[in-house]
Image 1: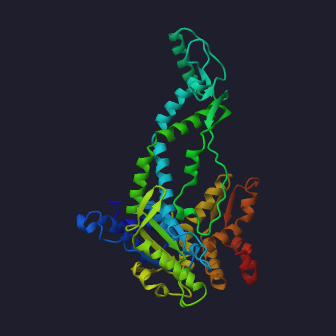
Image 2: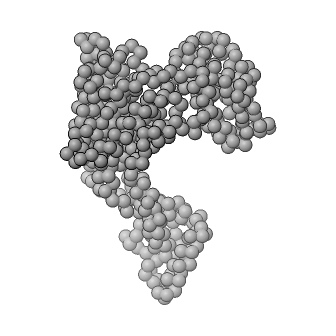
Image 3: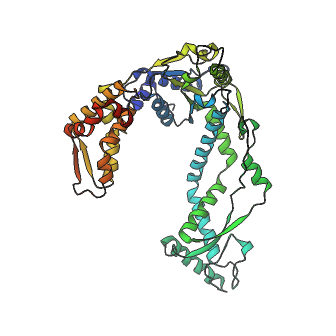
Length: 457
């Protein structure tokens, strides 16, 4: 993150997102300011608050994609939440603090997964020793007792000579590594992790109670094990996974996750316009304003209690977005407006942008379909005039019906290639070229019938 200058951040985002330069510049500056804050004098460090952003624009123009790519680019903890989840008449919704808890949970799981990957080699060696203990009795002439290890011998090798036993163990090790024993069966005693199903009825959700029932039950109930007969190949994977979990220092993972969320976390608040209302005096708007007031301390900076410990939200970056068709950002309560100082309006997408979206990004839509069909041995290509025609139809349908931006390209492409995708495994002709004529013939009737295009495209 320290190496990325704003120009480089924008350059990286350009690989995946077409246009929207103003929004890219804003998020690049906000991200660089985090790096700058870490290098200012100590007494100022805590005083500098993140500059939260509101992205304004219709659906399908890249608001979520910009935030998501930003988090991947910097390896920042990222969570996307719909603000409308927190609102209904009478305010029956999720606890607003749950978005911070979800962000921490995701980060803990991610770091835990990485730590397990890092110790995989060591876990594999321990798993190998455990498997050899199961296959070979430890004491000369005596089969291994059940309490001595976590399995039972699938076949017994009895020997009285210690040197001979060691030699036999090494032979077995060699056979195990070469996969010669993969299809043999062993009995493994595995911990039974299933917990009783408990249904809890609550109108505010269990988040507020700060209780993790899973952990509570696992400590109260006796630990049981379940015997399973598995192939040695599968048994090695199970044992390696178990050992990897044992080798990970969970306290270290949790402390790292808390620091990462507090310093680099990004929460994307989608559909924030749905909780804004012009008239705050009656009806559902009362609930909407209530949600805004609940959001305020989180965005402002407060302490949220989680099952892993308290989390400070002072330096989490909040990026809000909304179409703002019927309301304006100024319809949000003044206190919340003040916490989102940067407003960026995103441009609507048209014919020229659609052509670029189909062909330019690293994950361009046409490249995705080419890769998908290549798995069936079908080589599909698109002529330039076909791409132009798809883009033109997408723009027309967006204008005539609902404007859903670049998402319209997905619906068009699925309908256009439906037959090819269906017949691909059995088709004789493995080279397919999509040209303008093919696009026109396939989409002509639907495009001309507006009622039909509302349903299909």
